[in-house]
Image 1 (cartoon, protein in one colour):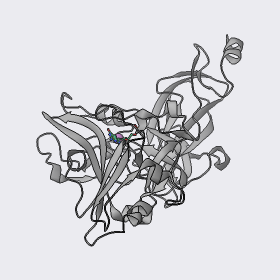
Image 2 (tube, helix red, strand yellow):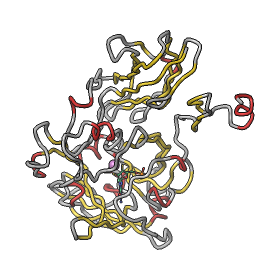
Image 3 (cartoon, protein in one colour):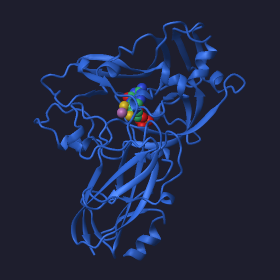
Image 4 (cartoon, protein in one colour):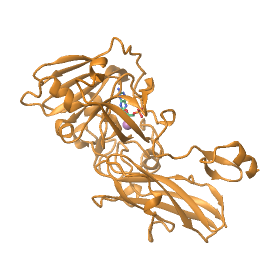
Length: 371
Ligand code: MTE
Ligand code: MO
């Protein structure tokens, strides 16, 4: 019974359905480490933090090997702590898969739903400071390449995970090398002992198990950088995709999702249905979230005090009580405006792309209302 559920489970559970009882952990501003999504291309390397050092090389004046202890020495590097959202560019890919025009046998990318996103308080040092410690930049440095200690297989070859970000990003924002996640040492699965956290960019650039940094003149030639995470135009598909006709995805656009209720839930209620979700923008922060109960004609603003605190480069979780008279199937959708008034495409198919990245269209769910 309902009384039993209330006794048995914590009071901040999200009750997805009262009967039969369905519930999930609260959608908190900060994601507990054990709940953070995991995206791996290969295995999880074992690294001994005592023996570990970071190599910094390429277009810096004094290439160096820096131990973890040195990085953590506050007399050398000021420590930084920041609340940051990591979002995989594959978040909500399942919706693009449903629009897929082919037979789908070539689809190998992970079919993520709304959960390939999470927010943590990261502690570490600024990459800018590390470059300075290595004597600063030499002429011609335009990109920073990161190497992870994990390896993966692709088309018969073995690769190290490697990606790059433009130096411009490192100069303007404090790209971070982090060893702590929510006050704990980085869990092994999230990159122990050291990872990159690139605010606002797709998760792929936040290289885990970081052991080498290389300052270079062009974007990394590594396959993850060159051949993956490309945004193709609408007419590009299996027959004509070359890696050069997609551009490299970096900053994540504004997007949002309804986390509860779930698509196709049946909800017994007395006139209002409570929705919860997240909203995020890679280039600023969500300023307003709006919900529609008619497919997107009339929108209602989520009360500002029902949105969590605003941080540059972190999501805001929100909740909304929607008045509902109708019985039967209704569609809810959500959209967000960020501080620069960017908002989301209306339909999934209007932003479909061959590699099925960045599903940022208005998120839609259908629920069965019993009033
Ligand atoms: N770093 C390494 N070394 N290997 C990886 O497979 N995956 C990337 C990125 N960094 C990856 C990596 C991708 S695609 C994402 S979305 C994030 O890590 C996910 O980070 P998480 O697993 O800590 O959530
Ligand atoms: Mo990702």
